[in-house]
Length: 589
Image 1 (cartoon, rainbow, N blue to C red):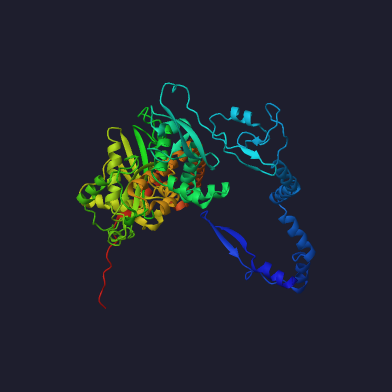
Image 2 (cartoon, helix red, strand yellow):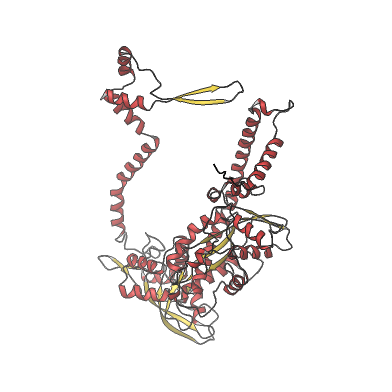
């Protein structure tokens, strides 16, 4: 065993040797076990006694090295939980029965408790009604063996100001905060619609006219957050409420039918309008403006990309009304179709660029016949705030990025903003603009993202890389890829929706994504600034090292290499990359 271990160790031995030439250049060489002379018999014995540890030493070394600080802390935490878990189970059994039979308020005999108010308070019926006036809390009553929900006493009274109005009472099926389904008598007034009266009680009606079912607003707010952040479907949310509250299959089906219609779409839009306050003051930000990008006089970096996963089936039906959000995120379909019809983009990619299928008309010829929307094309700023999106029906044609660029230019009109566009095939867009005679506008710069640039040929890498062009900084241009990773999770739901429902849900998701980015924007900018300062210091040190260690033959006329020489080399590199290779002549033998 010792010989096998020794052989394994010697097989991986590599010795690093540095050799410095006369010019100052350093060369690195590695010596393997083949280059090392074999030891003699005496040296072999010495190796066996020194290099090869015993089995006991190995076991001790492995146990000591594996016991890290993290493993020790983890063991302490596990031991702590093992110590208290039995006591915690005992406490949970004790709290399932009344701790006392006296009311916490009046000291009379008590049989009720409300877990939403307190887990230790016990109330009598009189104190329960007094403390839960116009409340949607469902108390529990002790029946000498266990607690069970008690819906008696649940009643919602109209607030003051309706004494002289026609008031009537109506039984409404209410899904309360905990997800329980109960029937509550509710006072209504003929002076306003029933939906508005339910909203005063903190309920959202399932229908706008003559509602029979209503939802607790905090419960719907929780569902909206889960659907936007975790992509929870209506069916999944209803099943969650079923297993939490032991609902029957009939109750779950009724809950699903009430929640899957127009009600939840209008609630999401109502929640957005209430939070953004754009109806009170149109100057307020509605979530489509980046707080860090320049509004006038500056450079604005925008990333473009397409996602072919956000499709929609033709069999999913049609919409009778326009989307509730209108054109807040998605451009009107008519404007896009008119632009596509008037714009011909059948030019081929530039011969110096790899033949990417993005932007190629070949994809339009292979579009799915069962889909009326084959994907989404969008734009976001360098801070990853969503700006503009377009439904695609003909593949990723060049007309889509050109349309988005034109719309962004119109927004920047008379603002003195230079638009820096980062797109996967920006080289193809530039070639198309030059061939069409339009040319690249003077207030636009085109670049390829830092990751996608390595799929292009060398001339494109030199000319369009964000790492080589000035004005792009450390922006990698992959912000849309990160946005797609969030948005494509809605595809399994939106592909079966009508056009209006689909656009509203995707718009809500984009607004939520932008809210996430803008909330943490200050911290992210500070982190990026710290990273940029460190990289700038390292880059200056590297450049100084290169200039200092440059070979002597590059120093002409007793002048040292400077940064001006490096800038001239960069320009020369661009000039050489743009030259077309000369054809090779074949000579006859």
